[in-house]
Image (cartoon, rainbow, N blue to C red):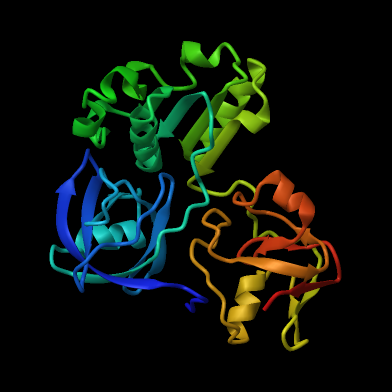
Length: 324
């Protein structure tokens, strides 16, 4: 794992608390004292986990004064990776390295908001809801879980600023997004933005409901846990990537990613999620036509063909010249 132009921050775990069944929250403070960089709602950090590598977690700190960062980590089923290591091995007082905050999921401007969280997808949406409330803008926060005991951040959701705007939905009570459509989604409103975070199936279901009720696709902003577009399946095509700085070319085989080839060649790149959902490996394109397979770049950015995610996207042209 190599990093390019990354500002790394040494932190210490100040506190670890249970935050709903299967979730733990961690408070991280700067090792050298002082304040951590400020961030906007929707931002995430990379946490560098021993023997695992970097994993992305949304920042869900209840204040923005920089005294500490909070992340919430759900133990994934059958996990042997990042969430398993954090739940089993992280302890108060441990020293870690994190990245500076990055935000590829910013809160857009709107006259009204509908927020939809699927499971641990509540983490970026909670801070968004708190900011919207502070700005006195109308909103609803719909939070979907399998069972009531999994609810995270319940004290914050019950504060006077949020309580009347929050709607909790539990599959065990036959109140999933598939079972019932919230009334606010049944009437499209051009002044409303819909913001969502959750697993891919949750996002797809929300998109289908919005289409059914005549919302425009541009009204939805979302972040998902897995990238539906990302695929390592062979398309039968190989291509070359060329480094603009040196002219060096490398062949990318049908079953390889651009990132894999560059890392094997000792080219310094930033790589994190490897699914096309975090934006860490976005790189400028000098020449050639990318085959976009990520969930980070907007449709407009993809149409411009001036950037590419190295971890999952490929090339439609025989040669792709990268700004490396």
